[in-house]
Amino acid sequence: MPPGTLPLPLNTMTLTDLIGTLAAILTTVSFLPQALHTFRTKDVKGISLGMYSAFTVGVALWLVYGLLLNAWPVVIANCVTLALASAILVMKLRYR
Amino acid sequence: MPPGTLPLPLNTMTLTDLIGTLAAILTTVSFLPQALHTFRTKDVKGISLGMYSAFTVGVALWLVYGLLLNAWPVVIANCVTLALASAILVMKLRYR
Image 1 (cartoon, rainbow over the protein chains, first blue to last red):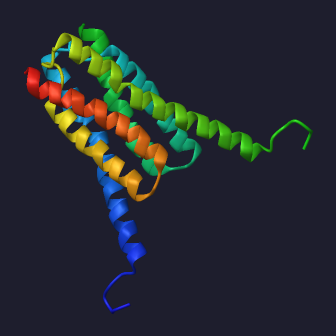
Image 2: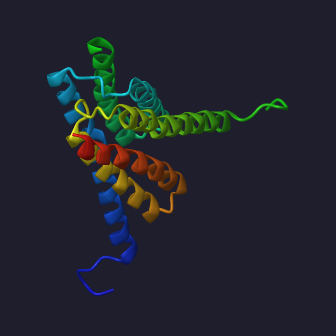
């Protein structure tokens, strides 16, 4: 192996980790613009109650899954998503 | 260990797997009622373009992550979510 280079598996791992981290950040923070949009416009007619009911329960289960496995990235990401998704669900129920 | 019982770690694993599977199913299929709701009502004013842009890119990255790790449950779940989220994104862009 030439000096200053990394073995291929390590390079591959780092790229995979980077892609996974970016994916987790994007799918987690994406609910922030929706929560802000709904808070500002109070327009919830286009938002599906079925989606936010199923999604909020699903994210709560991901949180339990992360806690059972002591997987802290899963716990932290799903705490953020749970807060945002349940805020959207509460607004859907309150503003309709 | 009494006959007919499972060792505790196996019981715990099975419950954790069940919770993770339920979580994955709920957070994946939850986008179906939203896609159907938007298709029927064509009301996209309440839907955030920022959310569906970031979310669709994030899910596409989860798909790449799953492919890089040969993690087929991640690939399958994110294929379904990518199809639904990108359909909602296209409707948001078309119906506004």
